[in-house]
Length: 228
Ligand code: SF4
Image 1 (tube, helix red, strand yellow):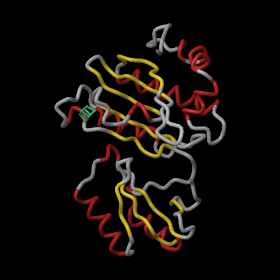
Image 2 (spheres, helix red, strand yellow):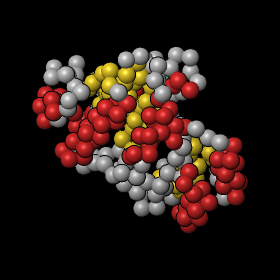
Image 3 (cartoon, protein in one colour):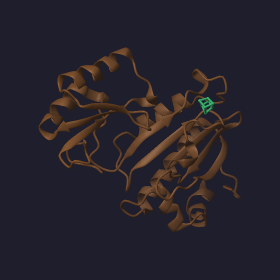
Image 4 (cartoon, helix red, strand yellow):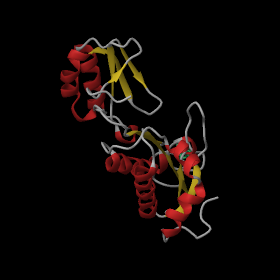
């Protein structure tokens, strides 16, 4: 839950955690050294990798937070409102022999576009470079999957207490059309969701037919019978 400090209150109710913001999940030796230096300087009790490809520094006291944020600089992910928590990104065509599309580039672009934007509830993105889906795209609020024919965009997935597979909204899109579709889906969600309503519950409440008639049939790159 968002806290005014931008850090995350812990189970004990008195210590905090800070997560890093590492677009694409990529780190340099300098970034690793900075995280290590901060962990040493403030005697951070635990540093853990999260499922969202972020480092989490855990167990700091409120009076230290401002100074830790300053020392970490832009690699600290300060969150004071519901927002895009992370863009989970697989290796894609840069590295992986199975990669059909450049998931790393698209994931980093999505991180750049939506970092710091407030939404009705938290969002998680997953970008995968092929159908093997290492970016866990089907269970993310926004999922994007690369194929030889372009990008598939999935909306409304969730891996939580009531897991949901996202709805495939469109397939075989160019990079620009995929980004445009994500933008329009998020704008529609922002304008129509209730506070704290995750995309999976939002889609259940409004129904796919309404989303289709109010948004998807207006988009030129989606066939009129769009979705599955
Ligand atoms: S989803 Fe495909 S491209 Fe991405 S890491 Fe997995 S196998 Fe490789």
